[in-house]
Figure 1 (tube, rainbow, N blue to C red):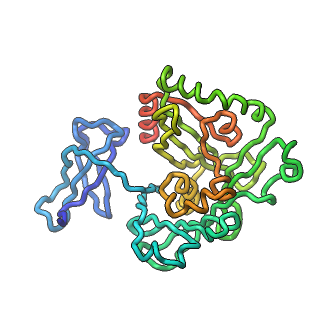
Figure 2: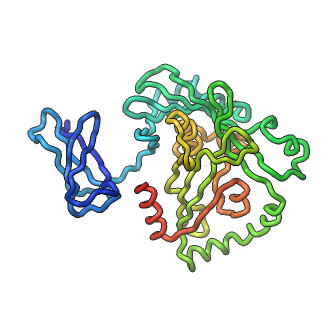
Figure 3: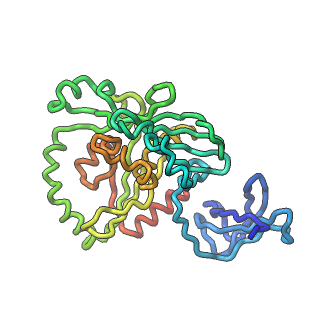
Length: 338
């Protein structure tokens, strides 16, 4: 049934008080709404904004409701992109068997993610681009995500890897001109190899966290660097939040987010380019990219992700913090209020 109003979800600003009137804009329409008395800063509420055909003339706050959003989506800047469902002819298109793709659609544009050739996953990479919504054209290429090659490493790391200690590039984000824009890298140190023996104690540590410390949540921060391998200046960070359901099974990933580093601004096109990394490891694209991702030597082998093993994560420039549920909710609230 056609609605005669538009539903707009708003968040109470940190400076606002219950009962205060705030201004908002949705789809080019400006309106005013009163914050309900039972809401606090940082909480969300839904407003019904009537259109020209509605009998109502002023926006009103909708009654509280329950909503579950289970559809795969990505929020980039102020736009939300939903994963498109492929039609029957798309799955049986033989020309796409070698170059699988995924499309995330927003109101005005689509983000396209494809593998250049899954028949040779070790030789080709993942390409990301944007195009107008509903367009069948190739659109604008924003760049590729590729594993690091021998030419990207320091000479000692290639000639004598057993004796090397220092930075090592793992993956790179390349612009359409072939220039490296961002990198993921590890830092190899001798002491980390000695600490790997503690991995055998990981099940005991997990049981202690789950049963004794009540720290089922873990927040990871992974640093994204610039094009210079020897420059440790952070450009952005990838934040993961994992939840331990049981010490005997892998943790459940409940959130991923990319934030610019302190004092830096990243363009929307660069954010879309960086989003290809969490899109591939989120599980949203495992059906389409199962072969090029999971084949030995494929892209998954080059993508450092949190492992829960401190020496390994430290080598991959991933910091972590264990939290209980109250601390995790407080951290989420703090992130939302920023």
